[in-house]
Amino acid sequence: MKVAKFGGSSVASAEQLRKVANIIKNDKDRRAIVVSAPGKRSKDDTKVTDLLIGLGEAYQTGKSYEKQLDQVLERFKDITEQLEISNNIITEIKQDVEVVFSSDYSNALKLDAIKAIGEDSLAKVLSEYLKSLGLEATYMNPKDAGIYLSDEPGNAQILDESYDHLYKLRDREGIFVIPGFFGYTKDGKLVTFSRGGSDITGSIVAAGVQADLYENFTDVDSVYSVNPNIVENPKEITSLTYKEMRELSYAGFAVFHDEALIPAFKASIPVCIKNTNNPNGLGTIIVSQKETSENPVVGIASDTGFLSLYVSKYLMNRELGFGRRLLHILEDEGISFEHTPSGIDDMSVIIRESQLPKEKEENVIKRIKNELDPDMVYTERDLALVMIVGEGMNSTIGIAEKATAAFSRANVNLEMINQGSSEVSMMFGIKSSGVDKAVKSLYQAFFE
Ligand code: ASP
Image (cartoon, rainbow, N blue to C red; front, side, top):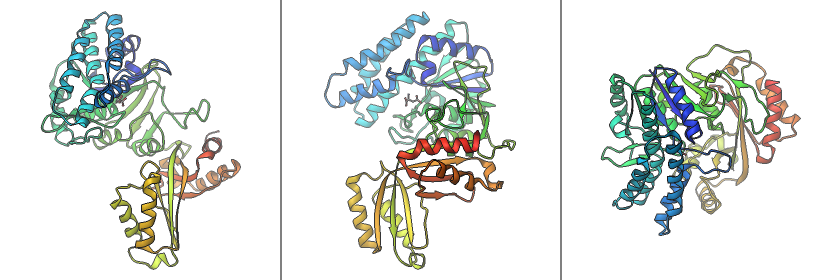
């Protein structure tokens, strides 16, 4: 049994849904289908989820939401008309919206229930369409599938018992279409994962039914070794390990939600990234272990929006508990950190800028000064992280040399270097303005 998940661009229009149906028809093992809400049909289009968020926010600020609702209905009307199936979904969406707004749920729960209408309606439409083509297909609500989530609206997490419920789906006949992105709390409230969360649903379903393969259909032929917006026609990655993919998606590889790997990884289900517009292409396969390739580096990733909090104090290395107290201040202030490269008398904490907005910074610095009595403390904003990733790096000599030479050729100053002992990745902190130059130069060094 295979689980096939189709992303927003794959279900954006009737034309795309025809391709989806063909893909499903072409392999009888594709029985569990997970879908996103219709995404963008062109660059300037708006995703249905964004329209729904606009709708929910308009309602909550007392404004009219007619416009957004009409746009959502229009998207579904177009699809059903062109696929020549019933347009019952239009009435259902209107009813769904009314039911949510007349409920006594909190604002956060109402917004989640509105957001979920995109995937829920699309799953109904697709199953209807598959039936019209003579396939045995049914829509399956996440509640009936047994997808139970933690009570964290907009950022829910799977509860382990869901996997046992999902396992029972193996015995079902035919194809079932499950909407991605949401599930239910134990007391029956609808909650969503974070944005892009249909990938997570797909992975959970794959782990639950113990699928032979989790196919994630999107709009690129494969995962590329570097961001194609920075380097033209980069090399495709045909296979990579879960660990490598995790590291790459941490730093800006947006092909696959970074939380989506864990369920498949734990259940050892191989994941395949494929293109709905070119389903016969090789795609990228993600597995636990792969044969060593010639190049120890599989990809180069980069992400901006970081800052470094620098603290120095003479003899810090001998002051018991210094690091813990510094991190405790951050914990106390609700700030999560990413990395902590350190020296003998200094420690830097790398934080996402969104975690430490300027308004919060003053207080954090004041507390560090009062509680730790440092010689110096300051933040440096506008940092980017550039990572080279590959499990093969740990047994290869000279990678760091090659990488730092590439930064130097690009005339980019290194602010920070970090490499954990697993050596799956090597991380460099630089000023954001140098990212493109640095990434191009690294690509040349490792791939050309
Ligand atoms: N539709 C949701 C979003 O745009 C979830 C998804 O597509 O994966 O975030």
